[in-house]
Length: 448
Image 1 (cartoon, rainbow, N blue to C red):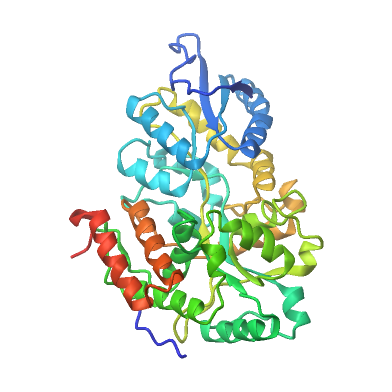
Image 2: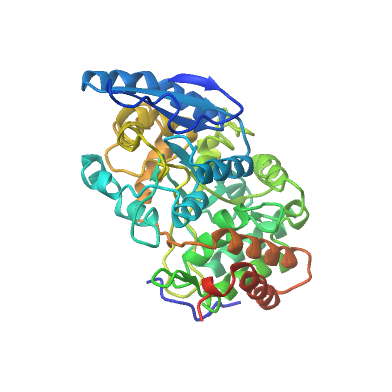
């Protein structure tokens, strides 16, 4: 089927604590020049990585005549637990001086006035000149300001089991269009009996259905679905329907693992069982897959990963669209507006975002550098897949959005689940999405 949808132009001191330390705790009144700042990490990988670089930061500050100490609050939490807890702390003015937060949190908390704009700091920092323009654009909020500096970034694209495709005689070169890709997927299904592609869909995948599945497909096809000037979502922008119809085509042709996507933890049977086994051959995935999912110390290591797996960019939905990568900014460092130690907090953020400290974090988290001067810095320089992804960032795309991201994600998840359940085709899913999103967003966030 030819896709001719008319869409917009592609135009440390470690404190193991269950609670939080207030942002001014232990900071002193500054009369003796000593400052203690706090940072909270909720994932063991980040706890280890940040803890390892704190002594170096404190030593560097001492050489500059600055007495800045860092307390690392280690509190293992899920993303939702962290979001709930940190929202309470931000409202109370008791959040740590440095926040390590995801994209959706940065959007919501910046709009609510909880975060400090970093622009003045960044414009005075020579490191800012090294960030890729595409990354700078991706982290600029709708008001034109930057509120979080990414600790790493990822390119969202398709990981493929090159070895399996070659074995069954299916072309492994970059597909230029979705027509071409779907023809190959149908060929794989006919030869193997597998459901060959997984893209996050449905409610069980949570926010990943939007951030890792739907949004990259939408943003590469239609850049007008969010109006930055008015801060509203254009639910009539034609890319929405185009992507819902794509999901419908994949499901109706038996190309998506529907039962697995309806599983309470859909990433487990798809990305942790079937892709490693070669029973799913194409997976929507970010750069972190090389480490966290399928690397030697990942969730399900794939032996001979570099020989068996490669990547494709995402095809466009219309004639003439070029394949593309989608930027995922991942976590980023921010400073609460109520912090009493903003200057010291920014010194730490700059340290974490430069040189060997950044290289250590990128390697540990499986992220790509969002700046152009990291390729020769070990241990990042020893990670060819991450280096490749970092270079791809320079030409990848992203559409900046604002308030309502969580509500849009919820409506997309619900509507794609209707397709998985066979209760709606693409048009019906789109109509259900518009109704749901309109109610969730409220009139102030929907473009008239």
